[in-house]
Length: 629
Ligand code: 3PY
Ligand code: ZN
Image 1 (cartoon, rainbow, N blue to C red):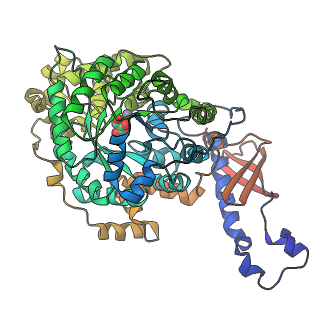
Image 2 (image 1 turned 180 degrees about the vertical axis):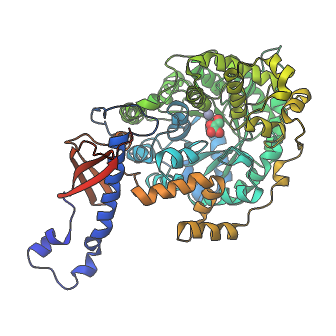
Image 3 (image 1 turned 90 degrees about the vertical axis):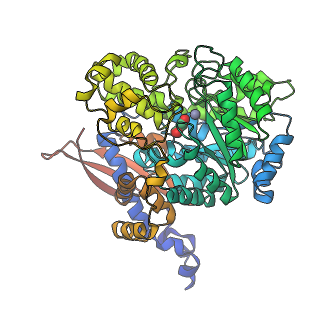
């Protein structure tokens, strides 16, 4: 399987090459381009081999057993995606309502790894299982594979374009509805964006293949969701209007978020024209009895289908889902077993058996699910350095209420500021801060504000009393100031005034929608600015990425120029580089393979540079790298 080039092409060797040879086989003549790709790829590998991947402390590349690729039986059936494409969003809603069985959304490609592996799962690993999911699990309602933190993490840490991820998976999964998590006016970011950015983002995401948008606001504040909900409706795709669940409806001592609160909110969300109502239990604190009551009463309150999202942090996720199914929930979120439980979603296979023989058991080919699960059992091992999650159920989540996706992140943040060993204190402080803030909904980005404040207080050994007594002299984290200024919208019941004064000092605050204060972005100006920076006219998706994450996007472009697309490398090589004597192959296009062998690595010279001796498709190559390790 050597790289085919003109000299070893059979027709050339046999002397049969005609004058039309170049026209009919142009791919043989782009050797310089392939060589350039090869050189850039080796440069990346050389760098990682010598200096390691940022944030990974492994000293040598681990050995892994051969991956078990899934062998699924293809099941022919009409899917939700087929219905959406042929008949539109309302037909999907009718289909969901007509089903007796509960439907499932598979979150493996998004929330599962966001919650377990710091969002680090790469496209390459999703691609190898994508067709198996599409063909083997066609009864899924949807696959959640985009949005939330995956958008910026892909650029920031994986040198991967989230748009490319969406397109590639779309090709491999033509019969599965794709679902994304959309943070309302905060889009896939951590701050408020102008309305026209929100609208454009949704339009382009829908064009690129997104089907279901779960729109939430981090304070459950409707004005921050309305623009997004309407924008999704305008695309003809499906919008899930979302209520984030916090508190405990069955706790009589904690009635800020009681059943009436959720029922009233459900009616308001339905009135926006949403197709589905999502109940987003981002921390996994919806206890089974509460789930039964909440779903039962919501079923009587609204006509649109209900979609439950929970996390298994407490270990009670399956019971919560099962109670919700008994109460009539239409769709629930689960993840493939090997990527489930703990701070992730409950296991798809476990829920299957929990409901088996009941009258709402999901339609699921459990053998296909097992095949897919074996694959993930193997692939999850590649990401061991990012495993900071919990190895056992944590019922203390009922007290700190930290979202599943935040837990590992906050743990890393705590470690980064030297509080790794005091994480228990940080969790307790997280609860204290929530109560100081007036008991707010905590989900990205409001959860980040609570986390930042908790870290700030533990780091500076501050108690709640200290904040009230000497708050005037403290400089609070930027995110906390911005939150109290109303930049994320208004919390349920308003801000606690005394604390707001202490934190804002003389800074003004707003009580209306932040979007009303944000001037629309002039896209033509941004295109011009970005064209100048990139040296080519960007696509609208790139313009959006630049607006949302200017520096992150430019850094990604810089990495692309230097190392080419590293998305295609296998994950162990991407994170660990190569061992001396190892050979890898990278299929950079169909039938075009780079065969890379690392022969040796020199000792550092007087300037600390090492030379790596590679063999690329039979040709010797040297790459010099500064050893900064
Ligand atoms: C996100 O916004 O990324 C979340 O997963 C919130 O739960
Ligand atoms: Zn979640």
